Image (cartoon, rainbow, N blue to C red; front, side, top):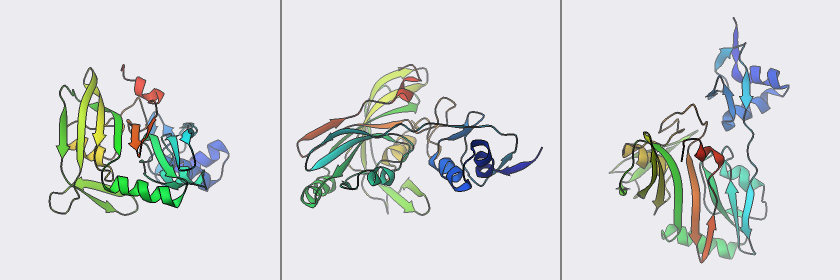
Length: 247
């Protein structure tokens, strides 16, 4: 049995270019034998059969002359979504595998006001997550986070060099050894929720970087549910993956 690079084998299977195959793997939508293919240039059996997950469309929740709110699907980066709306500029970012409410400004005056709200921690940001472990009581994690940015960002708790970060958690439901939880953050540090929940002993399911892998899903089980800013309130329902765990 021979081997070849994953992206080359995928390109042959799907009849697409090597660059397109590499893009799909980098996006996180390619699986083989139920596991996500993580490295496009990784060697893999030439008998491998791949599956490609369809990426849900971006849904517009609301827009007026000042603001555009969208429901971002998993597997699209914030920048990719922004490119779909050339008349608007990002106000906040969600990780590629995080879904839910994401905001863009449609003029510079409103963008300036909104950015100040984010900087002053006046924006309400509520998430839903599914984590490993039984979350019975409310708790909070108030620990500074340091982010090291390279080809991919990596964050960690660092009491000396980190920036302040507060994450508040409430339980929704417990099923077996998994919990569905409500998460509200005051700040918005890179990977804040994922790092804080890992530190608290409740890693997010599907989070290969900080959390708990799962055979049931190929994404981070984190969803931006409600955002409130400058008198606006936007909500996005959890995607169907959130109902795979009996919640």
